[in-house]
Amino acid sequence: MDTDTRRTRMLIDIIRVSKDMLVMARDNEWERVALLEAERRVMVQGCFAHTTREQDAPEVAAAIREILRLNQEVANLAGSWKEQIGADIQAQNLGRTAAAVYRSHAR
Image 1 (cartoon, rainbow, N blue to C red):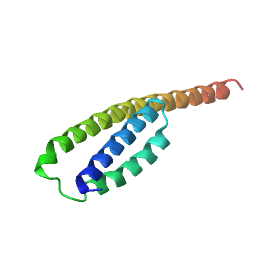
Image 2 (spheres, helix red, strand yellow):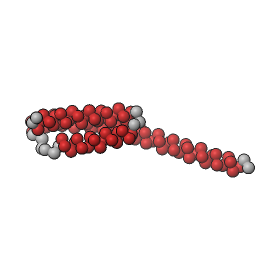
Image 3 (cartoon, rainbow, N blue to C red):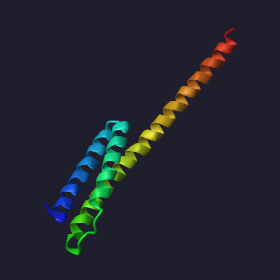
């Protein structure tokens, strides 16, 4: 398999993993997202170990745009999840504080 065919296959695989990451992010499976991201990072490094020929640049650029778009969606979900977790933690802390105050005054 020549370098160009291999790169095309690798780009397709990177996009597939990126889509899988998005599915996992939508399901709040953040540990799996992290594992897939590590796998994808290795794939990206291998994919771009060689320079891209000028005639392949449009295909590579389109793939990179798609990967970045998917990545942005995952990042947006991560931000929303982080905000929700922060709100949940704050609510738990408030609940604990309220319970402690109640117990201290109930005696």
